[in-house]
Image (cartoon, rainbow, N blue to C red; front, side, top):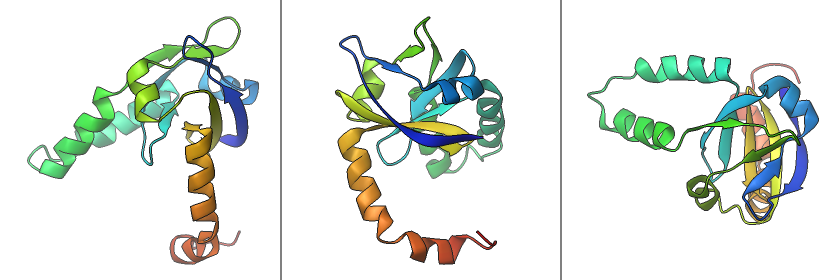
Amino acid sequence: MLMGEYQHSLDAKGRIFMPAKLRELLGDSFIITRGLDRCLFVYPPAEWQAIEQKFRALPVTRADARKFTRFFFSGAVDAELDKQGRVNIPAHLREYAHLEKDCVIIGVSNRVEIWSYDEWQKYYEESEESFAEIAETIVDFQL
């Protein structure tokens, strides 16, 4: 399971260090795409294949399904770690997620998310206030 929160910086070439604990579970190559809330989603190959199958099952006749599928897959790239454990984030993905220098990398069960530090702080502060409320409505098991 992918979990944890890590702070790293993009270098001048758009590379970011992937934390060792996350690298172990992601492997040497993985897929990066546009995520929700202006972050990037990073998937191990097996997880990406499972998601791709779910998208294939969506009806092509639904405009919202076509839109989301285009958004999700058009931004996707195959990525690999270099010998130092860094991954290059393409310019179009850095622009989408507002990644400039300071970043936060989080493990979220089946994926990794890459956030700009400022966007993560803003999102975290807004969400923290309603965390208990959200749990009451979506979590139906004992924590």
